[in-house]
Amino acid sequence: MTARFATHDTFVIEKTYEVAQDRVFAAWSNPKAKAKWFSPADTFEFRVGGRETSRGGPPGGPIFAFEATYQEIVPGERIVYGYTLDMDETRISASVVTVEFKPAGSGTQLIFTEQGAFLDGHDSPSQREHGTNAMLDTLGQVLQSASASGDSEI
Image (tube, rainbow, N blue to C red; front, side, top):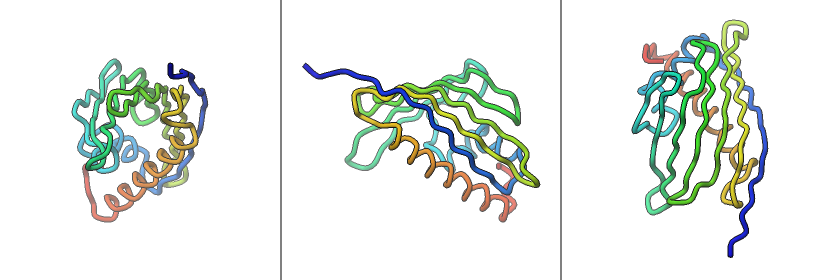
């Protein structure tokens, strides 16, 4: 019999982007903009009670399924959602995320807080934090590029 356990942890990542707050928020709330730095959504209902889902993975590798439900949205200021992450048919985590957007000079401070239950050793808080940091760095690159090119989607 396989031992079952949950590792609970919270991590906070803060990033400052030299882009206006409304544009950083749009990168989370517009499905075309979000697909530039996050897995393209199969379902994207950006509203309280709405769902966001995506499935994908590396060629020949496992399929990861992300399924989120939006719990609170304060336009331009805060997003709260709960999500599960599955690897093939195995649930590897369940989390609550709060994303806050605050003015920082002429740019935006993003505060990402994840409270998670990481299940049965399939994922760990340190792995998730590392991946989230990389994802938020990609968001920064996309925002910078969009700002430089005049991309109005973000």
